[in-house]
Image (cartoon, rainbow, N blue to C red; front, side, top):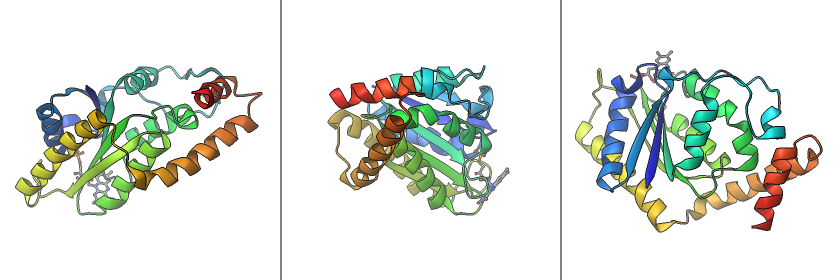
Length: 223
Ligand SMILES: Cc1cc2nc3c(=O)[nH]c(=O)nc-3n(C[C@H](O)[C@H](O)[C@H](O)COP(=O)(O)O)c2cc1C
């Protein structure tokens, strides 16, 4: 089982988010899965230019690392998104990646995969960033097994750290158990059903222009 972790802090794994992600990954490893970390600070992911080519061809023509990240997302069994809280949201690095995933979202291409989300902040509002990332996971077609977030207490330290780290490690294990058991998460079904109707309707409406996505949905419906 392969778990891909994408961290969007400009400090990479050396910051607070990296510290909390380490604990989630310790749970993943304890559950017997392989891990790979992609740090967006070492990769180039430019903003989406809204050329619509991904909808037409399935491939983004912006010359950077997005296609490599996309292939890794498509190949993994589960993934983890980790970002610090920057002004009540994810970092610009993570947002650029989210926007570039627009083609994957139109196809809900990560259906069948599971994800967890990780966030740290200076002083709170953790829940809204976690919820935002979980919603993004759902738009990709994947299921979110949950998230963990915390304000920092200092550099790479957190309040009530022992309990936090224990929850972080449990989240990593839960991610692997959900994948292994192909767990149903019925509370996410209504959103996904509505989103599926919306995306499949949008692609049908645009079928003459968006050849790739139109074929993708054709195959999905025949499955
Ligand atoms: C540009 C910027 C914006 C931030 N905005 C917020 C914020 O809105 N709320 C908050 O609680 N912390 C905010 N912080 C603090 C970070 O979320 C916090 O220090 C986080 O743990 C940093 O994670 P890292 O060490 O992994 O980069 C901000 C930090 C920076 C640099």
